[in-house]
Image (cartoon, rainbow, N blue to C red; front, side, top):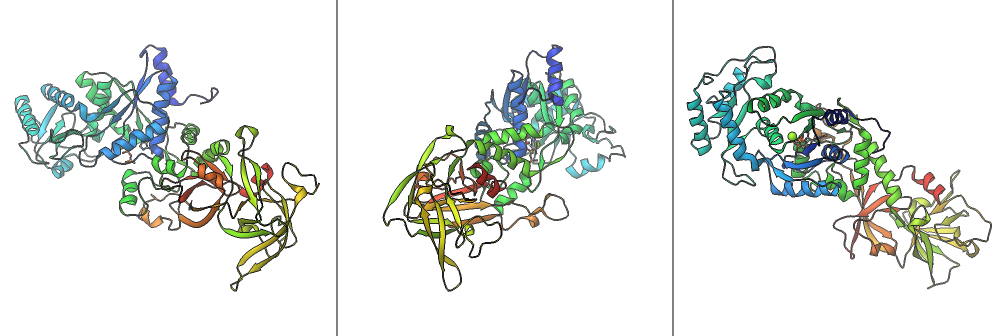
Length: 553
Ligand code: ATP
Ligand code: MG
């Protein structure tokens, strides 16, 4: 975070709270529900919550909001922990709302004793009907005036398993005519005879979000409880519960969630993509999940920078997917090792180069000396990119064409003398002669050419599979509700190239390394890659691939 940057509204609040002595130190939390994998929207919340903890010398808890037994799973818990750590953050405590079930139960009992909660027998439909509408006040449930003793007994019976799902609920007794619908005697507990991923069958009543969340914040003494804008109407209830229960006064603040073009970010929709086979799993490299982005080759730093750039606002907006790609390129440009790989190969034969000869050429690994160099073998027969050859050179064509000269990156200038085609008119071989005095780093010729192309030595190159990705959706806002979001899926979002060739240095490559295949984009090894079968993901293309790259070398 740069120092000159102005404070966002939450930082302003925190600085005021620290200055006034309201708090000596701050405690934030990131509260995921373990019912899916984290996505880039969660990354924003993670960077914000952990970032504030770090910036103000406070702490941040990782709290699993696991109060809905049906949708939650330890698989999700594990993936969430991995993702937060990978993003570069350490939590103060790993906590679970389910660990507070006993405490929450006692708080509910306390509320009943204060005459502020009651057990209701109405069905969900009946409760909804009596609730009224924003313009029509609701009506009291016939059970609203049960005695405290009766309520305590019924609530204990709910806990003891005497009732079936939905038979009874515990409600706060607030105001059925409140302008804020959330205050019209909201549900606090429901009966659910379901196995919980951590508490097993110990409980058959589970707290509702509104009862669990704020009280968990309070139990942990969270100072600034940050959530997204849709929780604004919940805030009054959040404050009411804390006030009536006389517990630690955590405070809720809301910011705009991240929305991004060309993707979806609801866990329900992402789950559908996975279960219906539109993608190959939560970590499919096209997914906006943190695991998908990691597999695709995103760096944690680029995601953190992105979250920093988009900032924290109080109004909803839509962020352009290309801003994320911009942050990614910016980081990869610094961190990626330059290598050569040919994705659509055609043979180039250097007719005046000796059969069987190999030269070990030196090539730079990066944009400056700090990256060092590596050896790239050169020989008579090379693979070059099919698109780098034209049978008849167009205007301003600076690559291969009969009679044209081009530099082979880190090697020699070659002149194209001819080519062969098969019956279908496909070019099969390109013939060149090289100019020995033009060797890179030792060029004494004074000859200059406008184009430089990449290549690999056919005899030394390694076969590789390369996976290229496009956006998963064809429209900017697939959640526009005009149609089912799945109708907007881009069926061509994955292209698999089975016959690519890469330079031999990649055999020593590491999973965490990022590569720039010269002129072709940024790549990383996919998780299925083995030394026997190399598999790469293209993380992102190079912007202005040709013009920019040529200038650099
Ligand atoms: P979804 O709507 O995708 O199901 P959620 O909000 O239910 O997500 P949680 O696990 O409850 O998912 O989210 C954990 C935290 O991350 C919450 O504080 C939530 O506000 C925040 N969060 C979720 N989505 C976004 C987003 N798109 N932008 C910023 N923060 C988000
Ligand atoms: Mg949520």
